[in-house]
Image: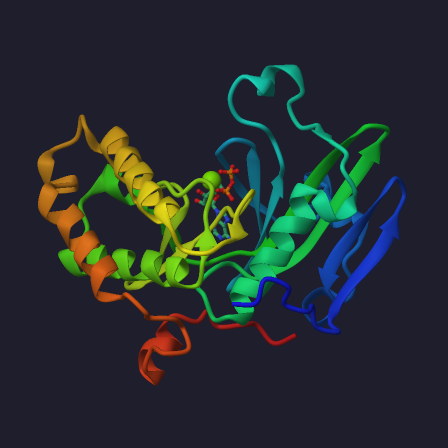
Length: 269
Ligand SMILES: Nc1ncnc2c1ncn2[C@@H]1O[C@H](COP(=O)(O)OP(=O)(O)O)[C@@H](O)[C@H]1O
Ligand SMILES: [Mg+2]
């Protein structure tokens, strides 16, 4: 995958008071700064719950089967106590939200199963900025973490997860935080990756193994108190089998039916 994939003409940038936004005019030509404010959606009665990861993620309902996800960037760990959502300004192209938006845009274009990016914005205050991103909501999805808390998943599911991760690795997509909360199971048999904050494109290497090790730790952390049928050694081997079998597989080389299965149904613009 090209490291500098040109952005299409539907990608627009707009100045906002104190900042700017980047958006896909073919999907959200009418996007406004208010879209990044949860209160805007609450007043319209379109807020549909939230999830707590590092920050707060708001789910927005925009139609029968459609929705958006709004995420405000927040730090994890120790720094979080010092400056919860402020990042040091290093220029617009270095903002967390613009970077993630552009990466998601490229990944979608390459046919990888990630949420479609809608809009990203930053607000600058002197040496610092805050950031937000809106993506298309994957309806009927559940994170692997939350599924495993309830039950196990069939071995074929583990194989599919392994294949999915390998496809990203084959294209040199580094996910900075590959854990069970960032793997989404959609409908019965689709696997998506979310949360590409700090992700980037780089030549496949040792980081691929490190990614898997990190995922394994996350799975153990989530399931160690649960009955063994929620996550077993056989499950992990299923994932690794899927991963190994998919060497060289990219969305373009998948056969047509599988390729379709890996694609989200895009809403009419
Ligand atoms: N596009 C999306 N569609 C559906 N659910 C999502 C989407 N993006 C995120 N989520 C859910 O929200 C959770 C938190 O989002 P994430 O992007 O991982 O932010 P963070 O971990 O930084 O809080 C995810 O684990 C997932 O369950
Ligand atoms: Mg996450």
